[in-house]
Length: 337
Ligand code: DAH
Image (cartoon, rainbow, N blue to C red; front, top):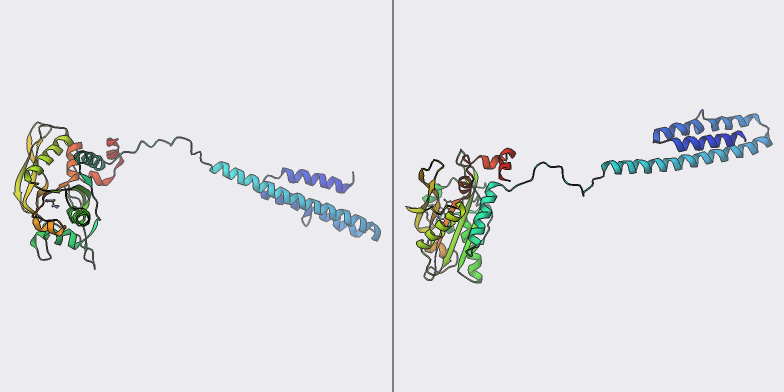
């Protein structure tokens, strides 16, 4: 076997053994580098006479070209292997079950809301929605609180700088939005609840700057305060699963209802003590508010109420600090799975 053949065999073996690019570079240098085996062969040519040099030179160059091809194909092989290794390492088996960080669960406020929505749906109410950034007009003026009305200061409003918008302070503006939209199409009866976030500049154990309300509105012919009382009593009894619950109305003032009432619920605490708890405001929709909603107050009447949803969830699930609802501490939330 000529020495060139020997070199080629050696090169094939080296190239096939190289398993990384640095290893390949080393192997390549051993043959083709400045002090490489093939380079030495080329240098040795000068010792030969012209004829012999021609022949030997061609043979050495063929050998060199062959080795260069070997290097190229080894490079491809290594790149492909690297890619496969990377893919294998990073592959995700989407069919595997998740690592179990504990099942997710609904937030207690969502649980309470779901329950209330179901109860109202069962007597024909639908759920209406409105934006949390509300116009001053819908949040106040359309609800009988024009710009200079003192009742505006009953709510600590977040005003949005440079606009006539506010963060809605209650869900009552959804009444206006809903009536205006539907009075164009069909008119009453309207039977809706509107749950959602509301905002007030207030923060302590029983107040959060963001909290949840649930608004209700029923407009039809001949609706009165008695319908309101029956509806709310039934709701509370079913929501809390306590047949003994009663409610009472105390006269109160809200510009968008006449008469307006504060709603109290009879509540028996764990020790068996019965107290009256304030749950929300309500009343018979003011004729001007009906008019603002495109409804004829000569023909229709209605009741409306607004309740704190968080408060109901606290009572339902025995939570004593409102702030727990908004801290998102997993130890708290996991108790509701
Ligand atoms: N919007 C009132 C509040 O946030 C609550 C309220 C009172 C809503 C009377 C009503 C109502 O619909 O009729 O303080």
